[in-house]
Length: 409
Image (cartoon, rainbow, N blue to C red; front, side):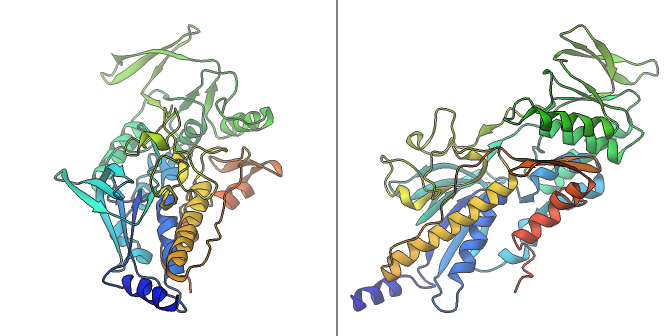
């Protein structure tokens, strides 16, 4: 037995490390990489790895900061960080690929990658795979640009259009994104009139939350200076010329109410899983990845399904999709991959970290205030804003939680 273990160890060297491919370089994907590296770096039993992270963006984008990134030019600069500028991952055994994974073949443990900017297609072999590409979200829920410089221009145009508005800016959609976007616009540009229209009788109507949470969201939105129109489903928006020659929109709702808006912003996410590159046997009818509590693929039809993981918004699991949940799942995926490596190298039976069922919970930033809902009920106010988001919609909290700056001992 000893000689066999020695041979296994010899097979895994700096010249032949474990190859880990991670599709998606946001919260879940980065958490998986960082936690796996921390375990593999242990002095007692270091394990050689080679991690490839593929993302369609050229940097880490703080998605939950979008409402502020599209309201503040200075914040938009902060919210997108080139991968080459993330200190913790600047090491020889980590590389970033600007591109997309178009196909994963678990049978051969090979993924097809289309690299940017030349759309070059190539195959990438792996020993472990992590799907962390999240959901496909529309503008302006998230910027659509794949390069930081294009994103900054995208944000600049939007901010400029808002600042020049002579009539109200209309935000359509009273979910979390619409509420936060309306409140951030009003907070950053207080002279602009902001109206939020929602088709239902309560905000956050699509979320499994109690009415007192939804009522609190309404109160805070109005307190932020945003006019809220409930039971207002958008029927049409028609470009017309204002008296001064500027273009505005004549908006009509299905209840007959009409208004003039300088800008109409559709904050209805229509999010869909980005799982088309995975075998259909791994997916639910809605396209979410079926997983075990260990984050491994849940499919008896997939070869080596235990070496394939999925984390974040694209998994078929309970709970409201949240940044914190994605980072937690990414951490567990990284730790569980390390357990499988130890099993192969040392013959140890793996002890997996498993996620539990997640009850409805939410943190919502609304201007200077925030609300939270979880096991301790509803809380709201400036202190909740400080706890959950601070002054930058959680950027510093996420950066330090993932140790992206590489400052922890």
